Every structure is written in C-alpha cells, then in structure tokens.
Image (cartoon, rainbow, N blue to C red; front, side, top):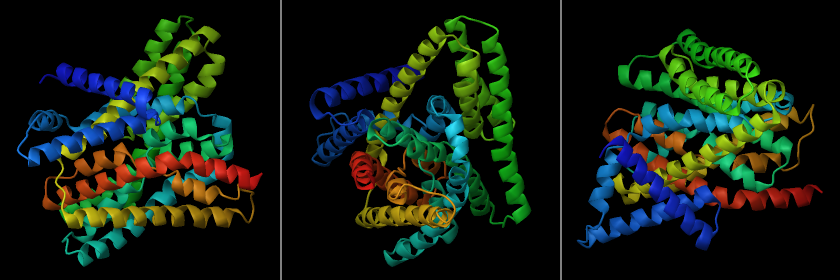
Length: 414
C-alpha cells in the first residue's frame, strides 16, 4: 500500500471508531477509539486461531508497513507537542518551574533506575532472561509521562489550573530528558562500552539545552514574521512551517526536537498570541491546532489499539506486564512524593497533589515508539510486549479514573 492509501485507511478507521464511541460508548474520545481498536484487533486474533483469517493478515500487513517509531517520533509528535504547548500559560509555568523541572529530570532518572533494577529481578524470577542494561533501557523508555495521553485526559478531568500546569508542563518536557537517558543507555547496550559522566553531561547539554535555545530562536523568528502580517491564512501556515521545519532542522543539527517545539510553542502561545495576532487570527489558529490535535490523537490511538495484532504474548510476559505496571506506578509515586514532600517545607501544595500526579502520570505512544526503536533482538520483542501492556493499562485504568480522583481530591480539600 502507498503512504496515501495507508493514511486514508487509518483516518477512515479513526473516524468510524470516533463515531461509534460518540454514539454508543461515550468514553473520552481517545480512550474510546483505542478500546474499540483493541477489541476489534482481539476479535481478529481470536478468529484467526479458529481458522477464520478474516482481515487479520491484511491488518498485519498494514501495520508491518508502518514504522510506529518513525511515524510518532519524527512525524506526529511535533504537531501534538506544539498544540499542547500553545495553550499553556507561560507565567503560570514559570511559577511552577522548580517542581516541573525536578519532575522532568530527577523524576525521570529516579524512575529509570527503580523500574530498571526491579524489572531485572522480576524477569529473573519469571525465568525471562534479559540483561541488566536492557532492563535499564526499559526503565528509561517507560519513565516519561506521555504529553499526548496526558493533555487529552486533562481537558476533561476538571483539574485546577495550578495542577494542570504541573502535570502538562512536566509531561511536555520530560520526554526530551527520557530520550537522552534512553540514547545513553542504548549506546552502552549496543557498543558494550561504558559512558563516563562528562559524555553524558555533554549529550544532555547538546540535546536538551541545545533544543531549548534552538526552540527559542525559531519561535522568535516566527514571532517577528507573524507580527509583520495580518492575514490568518499566512499566519497559520507560518505556524505549520515552524513545527514541521523546526523539528526537521533540530534533528539535522542533533538537538532535541521535542524540547525545541515545546519552547517554540510556549513562545508563540504566549508572547506571539498577545503581541503579534489579531483576535481573528487567534480564533483561527486555535481552531486549526485544536482540530489537528484531535485528528492526530485519534489516528495515534487507533495505531496503539491495532498494534496488538503484530505482538506475540506468552503467559510469563503478561504476568510480567501486570506486575511491572504496579512497579511503574510505585516508582512514579516515589519520584513525585519525595521532592514534593521536601518542597512542602517551604511551599504550600494541594493536600492530594502526590496522589493526583502519580495517577495522572499516564504512559502512552512515546514509550511504545522508543521500545520499537530498539535493535531487533529477543530482548526487544519482550520489552515491546510488556511496554504495550503497561501503556494500555495506564491509558484505560488511569485515564478513565483520573477525573474521579481529581473531583474526590477537590471535595476533600474544600
């Protein structure tokens, strides 16, 4: 199938599943679409086991032609991040800079090592032979909370602006940090050589700090261009060029594309929105990016739901996935709870903020994409399957209950 045929099919499936969810199931759109896709995939798999290969081979062929890692990390992610950053209040984010910064850095590293070492012993207990370095790789790819999943859920959760800023701000930045940690560990795993502290610090500076500086630069250039015109068609086109061109150029100069686009999105969404756009342009820009965000989210969650067709599951893998889903939650609780409780000595926090940040730390497509980017091996297949189990459980269980937790916490705090 051509790229156009594949994209057309995915869009059509997403539209039909969105319709079915809206008419009959009435779950949050992204979760409803993923669940329908997941059930549809499981039906195809079950039918194939009874010798009824209706559609499964065709669906498997389509999925094998789609590079999930390339599609998300070097395609959809830039647009989704920009759409999320566009609506975050920069002033509110700066007020929470310490907690957001700590969660997006120390939190990711802490989770990486807790999950990595714990998974090594759990795999050994279950008779699954995976080297420690691959367990740490698994810890790094499952550590970041996914901005795509989180932003979609927060729209309907009813969280306070302060809490929403903490969760959304962290999720927009921590994927860049997680990718740096992942790349360092992947280099060790594939080369067999240890990386020293100076190499790690240099890579972090190049990717994360370089990405932030680059994002500010392209955001400022686009802002100056936006300020010099008053035509919403041209200004929307400039925002598209900023995202697509900026992300591609960031990859070429080896800085973090995700961080660059988040910084550029914050710049345009705050400074650019108030000082370079008319009311008409703001309305059209918001409408365009909200619609694009919904469409790409729908397609992404269809892909996540259908991915089960091409995965191989065993009893031990399922048990490991269920146990490690709890471990990931516990690691999240520790990496959130320790810094917040230390900061409580000097600052006031919502009494249930640790519970909400823990339960609101959804895992999503970024974790699946990083797992699929591992070099082909037996370890990769196991890690992909377990990552998929954790991501689905996170999106479904946490995603469907976070709203109730936020409402409960708000009543208790009142």
